[in-house]
Length: 123
Image (tube, rainbow, N blue to C red; front, top):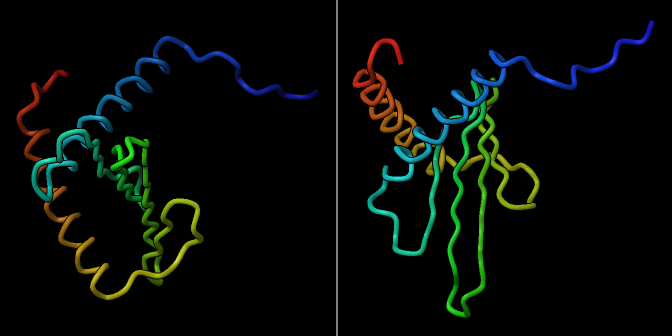
């Protein structure tokens, strides 16, 4: 017998998925402020997608009013951290980049934990 993929989620599955996406959006907002205010007309996000993946995303309009976007993905692996930016292939981080990412992760963790401490227990 062929097992078909589940096409529809239950209400509980959908609620959990929606809640998870909302938490990621909140964390991305917190991460966007780690290095100062976001310039007017820009959108910035920095967040932990999963146990091994960090995302830095920016959007803005350039001098010619053209939409620009850049996503940087950091994959934390046992033998180091790899970075992919835009459509470029993964590359190892330099020591300076690794130190900057480490600092960003430490700030992110502290601020996100503070955010969750402030949330009602039954939210």
